[in-house]
Length: 80
Image (cartoon, rainbow, N blue to C red):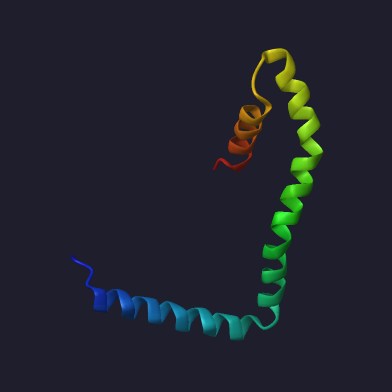
């Protein structure tokens, strides 16, 4: 089945309406969710600052670039 541009637009409109209806039902939860989303970068930065010395310490004897090790750690933390 081919998805036409018109059908795609209709699906998007339906999803927007469903989302808006859900927001109305949920009340102020949307504000909490948005606040949580805006807090994520700050929290991630704090975590990165906290583990940076540990990563540098672990990378030193192995000869790995600390950035490479940090990327590996980040990949492990975000893997499904």
